[in-house]
Image 1 (spheres, rainbow, N blue to C red):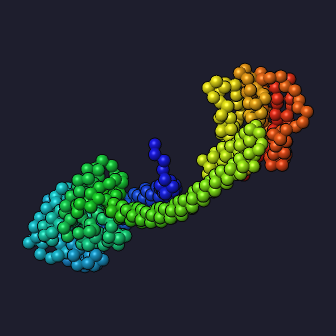
Image 2: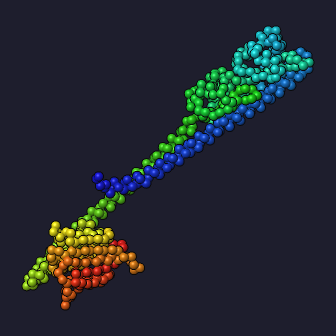
Image 3: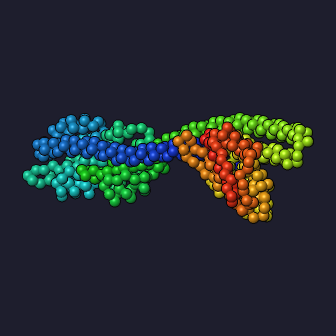
Length: 503
């Protein structure tokens, strides 16, 4: 899998941070939409109920007024001239378009508020409701029908006129349709609402909007079928104009009419899309700003890394030149010295160079102790000796300074083992164990170099330069100590070093 560049990693980090926030914001928008939709569903039903109560109150007022007219002596005595004055007073409450009629059971009109010439009036054309009044002796409320007198669509309130316990006449009142239109127009909250009053056959008798075009039409199919299944409900519908609505309806027990109120789905969805658009734009801007910032940071960091790499390369070049010069000077200086002395010095210099190469590979960020050990002991891990050097211990990160010093110490131990100890014959072995000690003064590294199977060991009369190098380096540069035990079966080195936590 290809390694991602720094700008790509930072861009993915920004996107990974911003996208959950954008998704969370979108989730909040949808949650608010669902909450608003639930509130709208409740509101349409409450609006329909409120209008039904107003409608019932108005119809009861009309019915009560007609019942008062039905009790007048002039009507019960068929004194229609005197009854006309009383009827006109009732009609004046509703305007000039209201009509009061009185008819007998056969449908013959015996009184009309429009004219005293009843002989010229046609018979009633809604005989079904007339028969109900005579049969039930109760007020009745008609559906929308075409009035023979008014010559237009009307509804009527019918009340029986009683005399001696019998129904003498039927008195009916045809109020102006504008009475019902005014009720729903006052309750319409805004242009997003559609409100209708339907008769018991599901036909519009008052409606907003478009009353002229819709009065007399049946309810839309999506509402019409449901109106006859239950007396009250909320449901999604489509209006006669083709507008998607959330609709609530309720039926009046008094008249059998149904009031329906609906709010356009668009009025709820439009804010949703607007909020989503705003959220998306803001989120997109923030994401672009974040990505731009990430790219700029990545560019700055990349330049810094390039400069850092350039400095490291320059440092490596200078150190290698210095080591080469130092080796040349040593060769000139030790020209008269023995070959053994020259090999010792060049070996130590080589160990320093190997440690430097390891640090250069890691850009002087430090190295792992096991890598340092492997580098130093590589010359001694040939095919015929690989199993003779065993290493056990955990991963221990080292600072550059500790890596250099420990490389020198390990080189001295390996060199002595190859010349005089366990690696100088064909049977000896070396075991290197290390561990981390957690002490109150801080963590420490302890390594133990154990040789076995080499030549017989005797303690030297004088301590060599290598032993002194190990002890001084451990004390002065590692903040620890080094001990060497010349046991008969082999030499044992024990070295402790303070670990630099931040290194």
